[in-house]
Image (tube, rainbow, N blue to C red; front, side, top):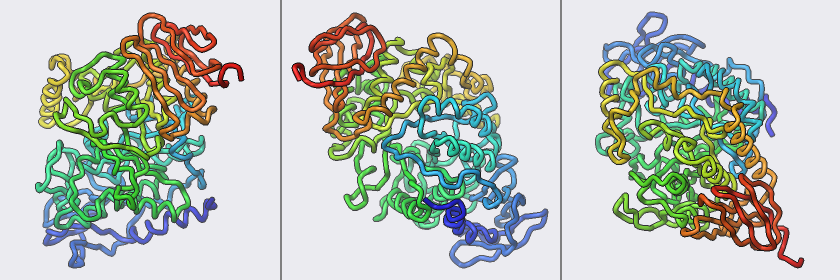
Amino acid sequence: MLTPAAYTEAVRAPARALNACYRVWAPAAQAVALRAGGVDTPMTPDGRGWWTSFRRCRHHEDYGFVVDGGEPLPDPRSPFQPDGVHGLSRWIDHDEFQWQVGDFQPPPLGSAVIYELHIGTFSPRGTFDGAVERLDALGELGITHVELMPICEFAGARGWGYDGVDLFAPHHAYGGPDGLKRLIDACHRRGLAVILDVVYNHAGPAGCYLQRFGPYFTRRHRTAWGDAANLDGPHSDEVRRFFIDNALMWLRDYRIDALRLDAIHAFVDFSAVPFLRQLTGEVKQLEAMTGRHLSVIAESDLNDPRVIRSADAGGYGTDAQWSDDFHHSIHAYVTGERAGYYEDFGTLGDIAAALCRGFVYDGRYSSHRRRLHGDSPDGIPGWRFVVSTQTHDQIGNRARGERLWMLTSPGRVRIAAALLMTSRFVPMLFQGEEWGATSPFLYFTDHEDELGALIRDGRRREFPAFAADPDQVPDPQAASTFEQSRLRWSERAADEHADLLRWYTSLIALRREIPSLRNGAAQNCRVAFDDAQEYLVMHRGDVVVACNFADVPRSMALPGRCMLRLASGSVELGRNRIVMAAESVAILAIAGPFGS
């Protein structure tokens, strides 16, 4: 383990070399000037698209760049936008912050229990410092990793963060750079690792000045959000450098422990060395330099195991990826929903496939996509998949933002939680899930009038596949939509919510206690089920998880002498059978065969 002083030297030396003076990449510009202290100073080109001012960077100095005589623009690599996306940038010297924890080592990702949260709605204050006040509750729950939804600068004061435009600047309304550092320091002081959600596949529609400087995006490729990031065309070397330097900055200067890459299926890249492989390789180089375990987690809907296979095996080398099939299979079954992409799911066989393999669609025909989808994940351990039964996407992309607690019975919610926490994968919770929060998580924005109207209309047209009434879709621009989405922490003490909180806390404690539940090997998982009787039994080494989804009691066979460890309803144990209450789950330890 590095000493605090050695750690500081290892991680900050690269930053000092880069931050000596103001520089900006603007390959098509004829002239660029630095505006600082109310004075415009011409910058010097180097012939390769970079412009330099030899004015020394000063902590908390406001500045901007004047390109070809226009209005001053924020720095594409702005470390802080105190006045929002249209204001001047403010320089931040990361050496000025006094860290309290200098030698934190994150727990292994394979043993993680992740908690996804949105800074603006997680606490009453809606800031980094407000989140600090709630961290002890996460420690008591048994969380190991806190995953922050995107926190870089976006237009307005409220939003999900996926329309960020100043990728190097923590959002001003959340508390800026120092606020984020205080949150990370507080997490580390409590033994919590921090994962940051970053977006490199598109930029937001308001306040994005990147194209005024260079070809960061290209019309050669298109995504659902418009022009794709320029990862393989002319000038793409510097565009890649921009995104990778951003990733390294969060890990180095903010001491983030892992990155979650948003929607990598929107990377369009025909390079011999894929961008994703380059990024993960450089993260591993930083890991070696600092002596800290650093991870990269990818979100992908391709069901492509290359995402997590090593570069030597022809993969991209990320440490883990999300598996939406796990969520979809459980959600479709416990709620009965079949609209949209849920039409591909809905049987216990789908849940069994998700539990055993990670992917349900591993080369199988998808009715929703009308083609074969995915590839086999054989040989990949479970700890390389992050799974969930609720996420910001799956809740927030519903018209009315309903959580699972509002869509199915309390018994089925407990079964879903048990399957999540006893699976061979890395479990992730979404804020408030653990107590059955009644606040929805809605889509909310804070854009100026014309753009806001377009977003409002677009949101109402978004849900034909899910049969939502457009008139019932909350206005994303309304402040009340944001306010409805705030967690109500007082609910945790109410009877039914407190009971669910105890259930989640017990499940997490059991996962931590029993090694078999953290064993991600495929051979450590076998599943039997009966669709007609509506029950499923999962074997996880020396643990049995019996699930009765039916609305009547059910009797199921057991493999031998078993001891009850945890149950959500009444249980009767016989010599080789268990009788379970309706819509309940039981977790049992196998003591050995009868007669032993």
